Length: 440
Length: 155
Picture 1 (cartoon, rainbow over the protein chains, first blue to last red):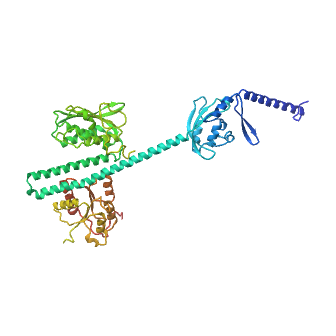
Picture 2 (cartoon, rainbow over the protein chains, first blue to last red):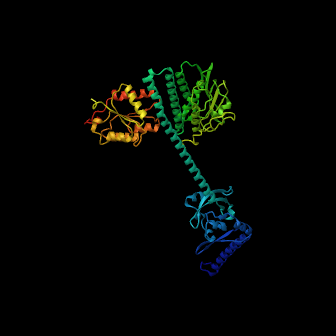
Picture 3 (cartoon, each protein chain N blue to C red):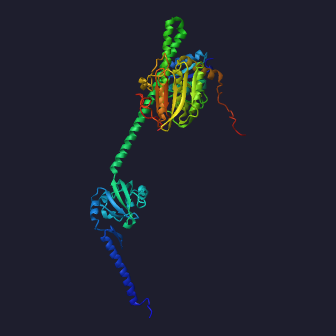
């Protein structure tokens, strides 16, 4: 007699087997719960999955978690909150049952969901990862939360744990600080612009009366010269010389003020070639001078061509000027490497300067020599210092009276001057606001 | 005779510069009468005002300062270039400003030249004299408007 599918005895045997299997499963679940291996149960009901958390051997840890001032949760592989402490529910301004069982993603601002997912996709065994994420609370507020995610071993049935710290206040404070810095920077830039405009306008307004001083003195000389004695001519020439001198000063101030406003653009510059051009110009201007010039070949820099030329013009021009009373005048342009950046130098064996007064060197209108010795208006090195500053570089000088001067400079951040050198960095003329021009 | 003599319109608010400029033109042996507009509005009135009796009063050269009370120099230049009667007149800017922005905008608005006022009298006299000689003697001014083919047609 063979068994038929409809045999009641056979059916009962199959059912019994199934019941045994389910009983075994239930016993295993109970054992796991007793052993503390289970934090929560997901039970399928007609209303969908429900999550039950358990009291077990790990209760002291649960109590600790509940007392934490930070939010804590464990999360399943598909991102569902299996457990959440009360603090997390408070942070989210939601009743705890609304938090547990929900996908974590639901509480995160849409734009931060990718960032959140990244935090939770680290392979297990790796160190925890943390980041700041914007959460949206049950009552619609946005809060900034620092989330630390730790991957868990697979055997726990959970993917990761999360500790969440509300850092909204810190983030707001940072934003406020940033806003204030922004505001101050804008204030400073505005003040700077106003000062530049002032310098510009004053310079122009000063020029007109100067033209009158020089022009009408000259007209007196031309048209009434015969009625003046020699002394009268002399006085009027002194008046004119003063006007010319002041005119040059105004031009220099204008150039100085323009320097921080004009466009700044770095391109590859062949400094050796620029230096050779300038030397040729200096020789043309004074063909009787004999100067031994040594220009190192192949010096290149990423620099603003116009400003780099201005720097070399001033430094080489000074070197020529201050060697005018030296028997065998020598002028050198070269470079050394320091801290990985080239440090350029312009050196001469001329009149030099006393290091005791070196601090004045880069200050506008400060001179270390009498005009009758070496003519000048004291603005050249101030101009150089400003051009260097726009390159984020540094300039410093070393010298000794009658033993020449050496000016070192860089055209990028990096090398710093030696402690005993006179620098052009800390000397900001009082009428000049700090900060650079419009290139920032 | 004087109605036919080519006039120069000097737009200048500084009386010192006015005197120096007129003196410099004289020193260059230029005898053209110089009309002076002492602010921007006066220049506009002179060129476009109701007092303006058609073309016979139009200058052959306008020497224009930029920093002027009421209407500034660049604004005057804009209006000169926008008006059919004055748009071909040579305008030379003579100013203290060496600002790139002013030079650029001067040319952008159609100036024929840009001269920075030198501080030294000798340089000033030379500059103004030379610009006077160039525009009043050497340069050929535009004839009155007529039906001239500009000659760029392909026909």
